[in-house]
Length: 428
Image (cartoon, rainbow, N blue to C red):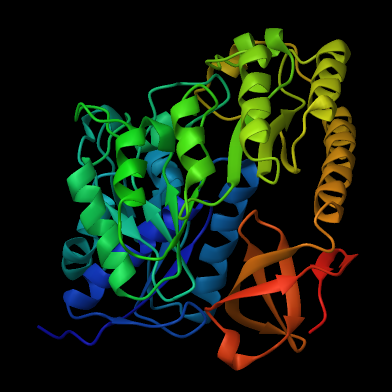
């Protein structure tokens, strides 16, 4: 069946969204639609949205207006987290034709074939009814693919809307997930990144755990790089760390959310660990893998965060042997527990606290990079060319560049890291 209708996708937010978009593109193509770049004219434009921050919502609204200026007769469909959280509100935005919630987005093609010129509609059921897991992985880049191994979250942290947007924690079992991974490997990718809303919660309901999956991946005969995207510290146990430490496949690179380095704030946030457990995980990783790269998420300016809480968090992070930070300035989100507190941090103070953490991140990253100057490490080079250079990452996530060489694209090269200039730069 070939309808020859052109469809364009645009993805906002996390790598999970990107992997799901890839699946939706394939479904649309199988249904007879012609996929075109988002910048081109299309009959249908699909925005896969995020709603982690207020800026994500604003960007979605901006893109809707942009589409309608470019192609006023085209249909605009909104899916993703923003669509599940505020379907009625989005359906009332001028230019929106259809809004699909967390379950219905995977029936996108069927809905498009029935879409007419009637009033905008939204289909977003109760998130508690969403039970199905839809595996997916990003396509189009033979260097690296992000594989969705888990969806949803049962944690309900007080700042987070993701359980409301994506539902309860769920995944396939090890056997099913390995089939998805093998399909990605058959396309010739060199590196896979295991991703999810709460990646370490893989296997819930299947009497299996994340360690069972990483063990199965480790047993594959393929020469492949594997990274774990973000994993909660309470789910990153010593067994997983030990496996990564001796692995030829899993890279010595962890990203471990902290959010606050103050125990009182962690309780207010409804996090499932304290600073003692967090420090233990970091120190155990460094004892097993001194060369490991460790990234950390931090939220600043959260409700109830006093100056003392902030300083405790700053000092705690400064004391850790970590490599870089992702710093998020807290923004209020509807229907979260955080809004029950009336003690909010002024916007200007939030910005100052963000800047303080960013300075620490710059210093940590610089020191981490410097410690490897003069060493030889294996780098996977990416496809993109920028100003005559090509870029890639070492096993322990140091971003490097060298003059572009087409024969190195998508290959592993062992290179000496020679000097530091924002990136590690090396000469041939």
